[in-house]
Image (cartoon, rainbow over all chains, first blue to last red; front, side, top):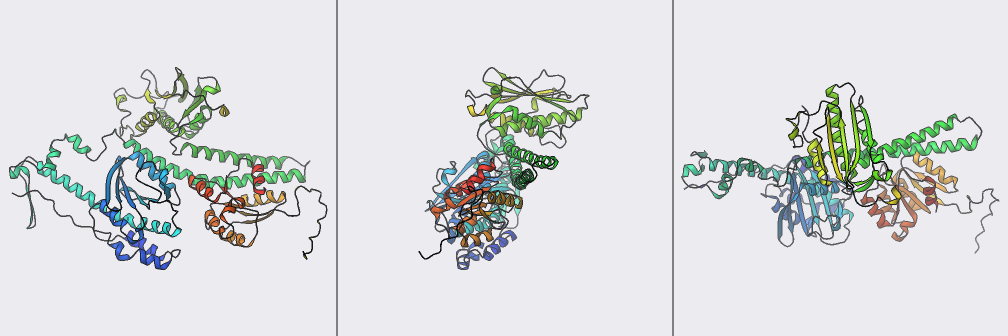
Length: 498
Length: 140
């Protein structure tokens, strides 16, 4: 009886241009000693990395066996398929130990970002608590491939600082391995897809026979009149939705987190660049204006004040620009830590962010707790900002569509009992139709033609991370009121800050 | 002991700022307005300041000159400030790097701080919170 078998895959062995380019760059890198360049990375040895392996576990082993990494102890490759909620760790350690396990997309995202930000790509194991099996210094490089985010890590299992040559070689190797990994993942994907298709054919209730050429033929379970093979059987006993979820985490829906991570990463990069490119010249302008003002004072102590005033204006405005950039960067950093913030400072800044989107709209902030001390709040300012910013932007969009006579947004802050801080975002737009209300926090639910449907879902997840909740006030008419409820710390704010 | 004594300087009206041995400072900074400003501010305090924009030029000067303090920006046009420090290890023993070098930077990441710690160097973020204090640190 013919058992179902898989049609052999066409192996992808063509060496892509990206790989050839990386190899050329390596061999032309004159900062490295020539003998080493050719000795450690022979073209043949590297080209052998293509087409030989069927999965990443084998590749980690092969990488470790390359001459250039002979002094190293372990190699791991972590892959996150873009849009999926987990990272997969493939690891090989000397003498012959292989591991495979999954990590959450959040852990992966943090790791990826940390490595991306590092200039020297050199780390100590204390920096990443995630990997208990790493010891000493290691190199890590992040790769942004077409369909995957990949992290490559090589560890020597010792504490000696590597030489600059080693560092350069690792950089080259990471570039070379990018296309190799991409190729391998494509093969793996194709294989998985094929297995899935075969399993579906196998459990198809009508008899089916497929013939391809002379030697390959396949008859499904119904055609063979025998029970389906175990792997297909597994598929048969899943509900249709579960089948769709194979390969996804069984955790709650993490799609909003993934989008959130990508957005923050992008904004963070942009702001880092802006920060450096603008702050430096602004600082120069301020310094020079101050020196000129001093000069004027010392040479013409009783002269007209006009020029001196102008110069002081210049330095004041430069400082203001600096502060604005500084504040933006703080709003979008990826810190995980809670810190004390003064809501009287933070909230007006968030309102400033919607200045252009809500140009025609009257905006107001009401602080109900009256003592300044009660407006100190311990939280993750980045996440709070993102929640409030999202809700405020939603309100401006609702108001811009509603064409009401006096559009208005009120952000009100008050305490509920001693231990809760509530942020209410009210607008006087048309509100949300009751039949839609139950769905608004679901990911991918949107009524906007260009919306992603992730804004409120992200807000909800961020509020959860802050141990809080987000809800709406069903009695608010007209318009809409969202309520963000967050826990207040029982600690006192540090004395220096109030 | 046969060396002639240096001529006694004429009595100066501001004896505090100009001593017989003015401090020699090298300033490496590629933002020209900042470079010029800091140079002037330090010179007003009686220091002799060489200012350069390029890292390679700085490396040459460090190899020749005897500087009390070298103030080095990290983001230069040609090479990074860290490269300058690495190169300076040929002139100064590692234990003395901290006495001679001050890093100024507009972008101080944990990596930068770690690296600076290895050299024992002080890191000052731009923009300086208090200019007078920083200038004093440069000249101390």
